[in-house]
Length: 195
Image 1 (cartoon, rainbow, N blue to C red):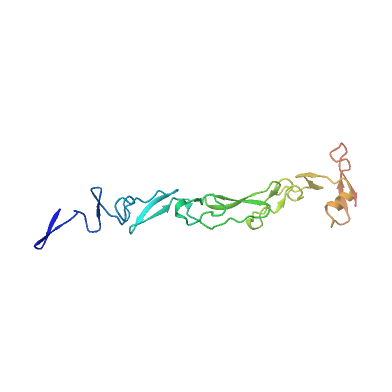
Image 2 (image 1 turned 180 degrees about the vertical axis):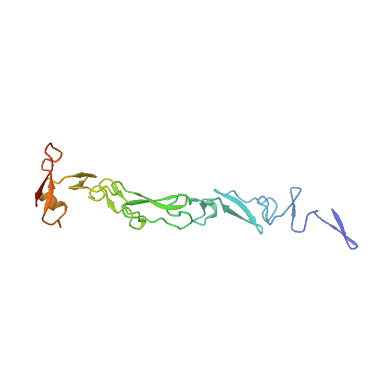
């Protein structure tokens, strides 16, 4: 197209001054992901992201729940921040690993799973899974399942078989009356003795 500018005719692409004619169409090369910076310069596809073109330079925006944590454009948004324990909810947000537990990340929030035989009976994440359910007389086999008498053995409340067993399982025990069951789960009922 030619347009007059005063007395001198000038040729024009028919596009606005901020646009270029690419494949027969007027395109803003400053913002087009298919013609970024120049006609035919398509921004590359990036994993877990959408392509962007700003001021004629290609870039990308991570999809929700993903992050470009290594800042390497060629592998895009390589981390799923919804489940990564090293980048939970955001790049660099590492989940702590409490005692006797394995850290977890679900929906971008850190948590933990107790190791077998352990439990978080006080609900305090800072000290993790603080109770060994296999031997704790206050939490025998489950939180707050206290043994009425005896001790906790492999997660079950059992009666002590002798005064020596009481002393071995609780060395600071004071002298006094204790219930013992010399034959264990046998036919004889537990009875009280002075140890």
